[in-house]
Length: 372
Image 1 (cartoon, one colour):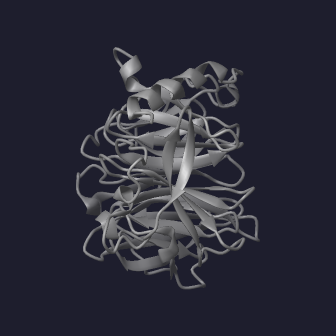
Image 2 (cartoon, helix red, strand yellow):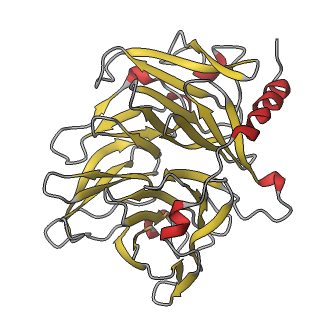
């Protein structure tokens, strides 16, 4: 039997196998930051930034939808007319949360805004399905659920209980298998995998939890996904514990996720099962990246990490997993950056300051950065 310390030791052995290549994002986007004095935000030289929504204010003139408070996890979806939809969660408790959306035309003009989900609690992050829906995750304790939402708002959101009841944070899909990987925001949280019974359907399937098998992860089934008697994370004794699971994303046969208590970014190789720590704040005397939270992947394959606190930055990890600042919001120290997501063409980046300049959930601000 391997202890958690043994497992982390073996996991670290894989760090030497990381592929090294020149940063594509850094090559196309300047690492020199300039201050937008109107908004007090540092952005790459040549980029432009604007506010697209403020909490509790209308987004578009043709809609009476007020942008939700505490905007959190987000994603973009392409539309048939060449435009896209930015979807964003609302991390409000007591059944006041949910998710909303902003629709853009092919020129980036906002044409509509609307609610996707209401009556849920602490909708934190989530993830995109391979078939083009949004999964909104409740970070509401051991009873938290996942809701599948239609980004267009034409279909009602659907509860997906087969994916388990726990303190959900985020979701990432392997499009090759439709397997779904999920993080849990608890000090002794777990990493989960959901294997759908049918392709393009989350109605039924097998919920599993990660266990350590020497230097790789294995998976064991959760017998009671509803957590009706025992919380999911305690149903398998040998489950690997992670210190506050946060954002998660799939890219090129790998699943990347963050853990906030130890300020780490992890990489799981789907085919080999090997788990690596690719960034740890403990490795730096003065770490650039702290407060790791939501995660996105750039069109060139670089990772973007949003900070919950830290210096209110979005940090990019280049292809050698070295951090550099992509965006920095000034004067909003009581907030956190959430929901980073690229438009389908990769030219625009959306994200929110969850509590804005006021430090309250009603003060959220959602931004768009347009790269040159």
